[in-house]
Image (cartoon, rainbow, N blue to C red; front, side):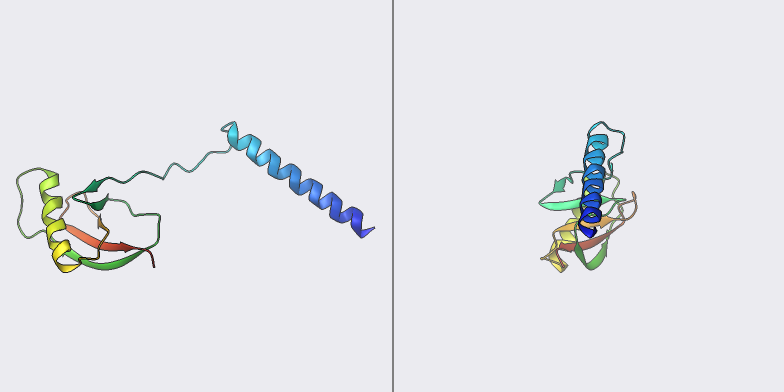
Length: 110
């Protein structure tokens, strides 16, 4: 008697799994659209107003020391230079603001 219940449960579970993959492949179940490939500048991963989905360790913050009238890349490179000096083990930088005035140095992994 209990064998029939187990088989019935397995059959229902299998059906639900098949339906999920079928509906997912047809686009009825939406996928997450929050994944992206991150660009690097001077070998450093740059996150602007976003955070990595991978585990990372916060190392410290650096502010740009001078107000640049040039491009955003110049601001980013200024912060990269300071972070490389103070946090040589850093893999990336998180800029919380589009102003690029402060960058958080991060190291991937725990």
